[in-house]
Image (cartoon, rainbow, N blue to C red; front, side, top):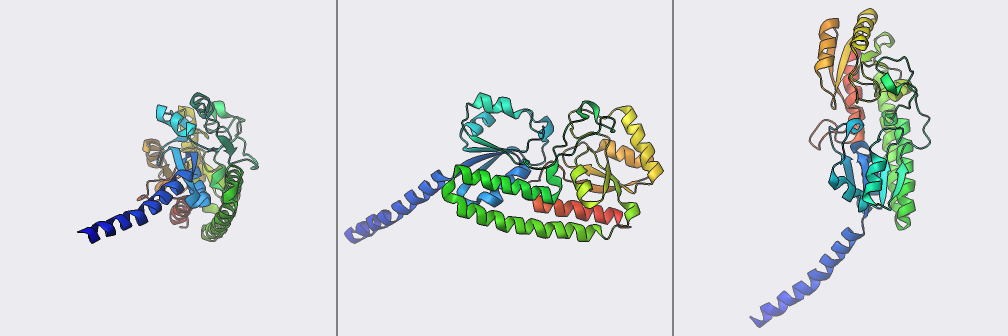
Length: 305
């Protein structure tokens, strides 16, 4: 019995420091808040095991119309770094940061990107005419700028992790380069005269500019207002005139309008595109790379003919 007691004490003495060390490592992680799931995914890829990432706007949710919860202020209060998209996407964030009393550093992940501007007369533009389109991540080359900004922000708040952050970012940027080549290779299968689609809201302008697909949307860059009857009628006329082959749903939007447009024009529903949000882990687009791959495969399948 005495020997057993001695062995037990020895085991506790061996395990306790290991547990304490693990707790210390967990405690020393950098708390980072990302405003929505795509930024959260970028941050996890760069930060790796050195960061604890919390996302405010969760999977399949709409950042445009998000209403912060009281718990969000506490998340920001506990953070060392807050990562936002900028370009007018998170209009609710400044008040949230102020109310939290947070002293966290902030980084605008889209810093350095040339913004796409919304024409005042564009269908669905509404009161957003002349504003910047916030969906810059839809171009993979822009996503690389996001990643570089996040890397530099993490190094600024955690210089001891600089080597890790640079290595992780380098690996992820290489994967994004491969993704960009994959997108271009798949789009080459679509005949030029079929590169026209309808999506729910104007979230794919950067994708269109980068890859040569024309997107038409009844809603503007924000989902905060419904399209007018005139906007919908104009879209239906345009679809019929241009013989646009497919309309696409979005994971953050009500599908009924797009199904109506498909019915009235004879275009097929090409599936769901992911624009502003990722899915849960078991969904079709749990990461940014998965999202882009899903979207390009859906587009190619519907448009290649």
